[in-house]
Length: 53
Image 1 (cartoon, helix red, strand yellow):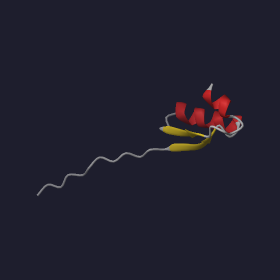
Image 2 (tube, rainbow, N blue to C red):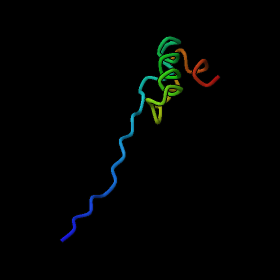
Image 3 (cartoon, one colour):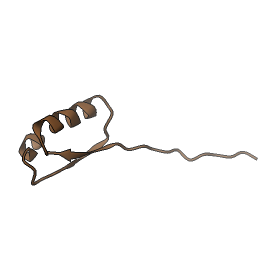
Image 4 (cartoon, helix red, strand yellow):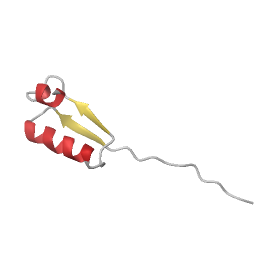
């Protein structure tokens, strides 16, 4: 009997994108380096516009 395993995916999501310019820079770098798959933008946070740009 052959057992087949289902493929699994691991997704890394950054929180606090938009909180502070330094947080934004770290999230952007992690994404560029292939560490992050997604980010959650804090729309009402102080650096949200910086994150959008």
